[in-house]
Image (cartoon, rainbow, N blue to C red; front, side, top):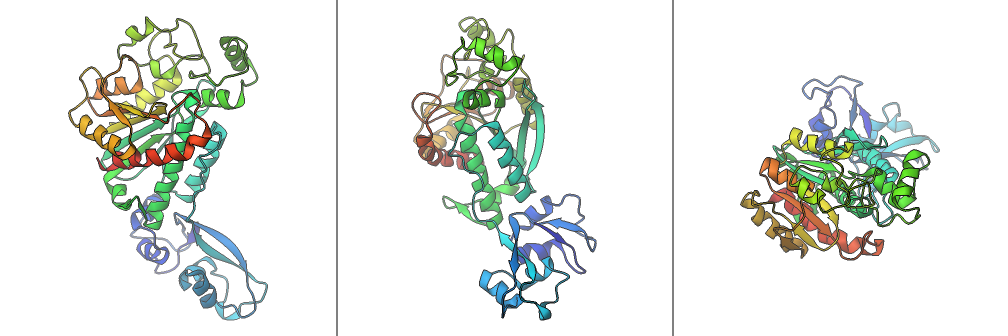
Length: 395
């Protein structure tokens, strides 16, 4: 919601007027000098929308504010040209409305278009979000990183490295919306205050690493050369539900130089719906973007969300730090998932992250069954995962 500065206004005053934490207002208006606001300057208030109201007989600003449990001055602020003593029946005024509901519905086939629409809507409502394109997919789709918070501890989540595991993006985005609601409404999630995390943690999220592959699984092959080649790789079948790779048939989670040669020797040797590690490490734009992001951000911990198995892989060649065990045990406690230290599989993002940075890295396998997991599991998976999201912030 946009407002215009009046004489004597301050960001601190807006924080009290709308009951929104001052830090969120400051970070929503990085081009504004909090110590010297200019009259007429536009200020964005996070977590609010406006609605139009037609004045009824007997209405006053006080009556309208009282019925909606909002401050009288918030109405005056949004209607500077309206004389509150001379309201006319049928006159239209603008009312501030605090957003208390999710705009993200993760419980649906969650493709790149839905993700993009949700990100745009969240950014409009919560302008303290920092959104950056870190690279592009093979087909040119933006790979967006979302950052929230001011803290020096940078925690990273990502989803949909594998195309038919798109439900991970939906789970991440729904929780992101819950987190934003809790911040702006000063609410708790499972009894935990969220606002302290804003100053303690910077949350980095890449919700969909493999957008071309996700769209392929959900919507079928695109027109043109990429779709034709994907159909050829899929042996002409129109069923892409088993497809894990990117649009070129490269498995993005087998693309990292962490014993890549070991995996390459026992995996497919040409493009395939799954498991082909590429002809060498880091050939795909999606994997390069994620490697560069890790180098740039210096994550304190990293969580890669996959499906399925209800397990959490947390070790790599003994290079993981001792505190990884403490963290994964807490993840297991709050989710019911089983921590597994080592597995005979290499060259994944988690493996490479631990190898390169010696920081805690985790592959979290959500749900049980055959990928892609059905949406009738979404609510259960989401409830199990909330605890992991929260624990990654406080551990």
